[in-house]
Image 1 (cartoon, rainbow, N blue to C red):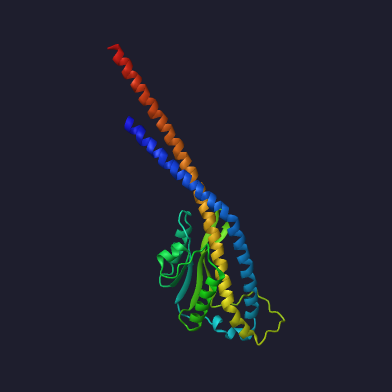
Image 2 (cartoon, rainbow, N blue to C red):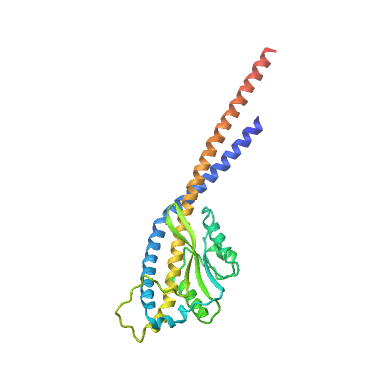
Length: 267
């Protein structure tokens, strides 16, 4: 009986430590959510403006001769993979790597500590990812795409749907696809449309990469907040259950001691 009580006390202390950890991580995630979502929204606005510009340029017949709009029949892929900087975020990282299994032969550019741990490359944290990092990647991607080193480029990232829901998907960036909804504009581009398009594309790719990383990081923070809240509730329920077992065991031990004392005094 004494051994059971000691074991229960140890388990309660262990789960209580876990509870304190999950509460602390949940508070940290909560403090980052507002800043992360604001950054995500700014990235989306910038990406939307770039997309509108590129779509308008793509409506010009001359721009369809751009090397960035040439589709090929090849299947050589280059993927920028955005994973989390840390774990304990529910299925956030697992969903990214599960989706990545569909492209086993792709060349990988990792962003986020968890992705960099899996794939060789420069260590880039998603939380501290900058436009300069994106521009360096975009310049390399555009150069190698024109050189024909791969046929398609996309970003494996996370779509932020809500605080409770995030979805892993691939955002394909190259080659450019002409949007059916894009409307031609009566604008004059100097020196000409195709030159402007080719000059804009590296900025477009960089902007889309930044927006994808910011949105993914917001999803990571939200997923961690939800996961820590759930873990905290489970830990508290376990402590309550173990506490009940501990009190019953302690009560049983006291009852046994009293019984032994009474039996001893009677003899």
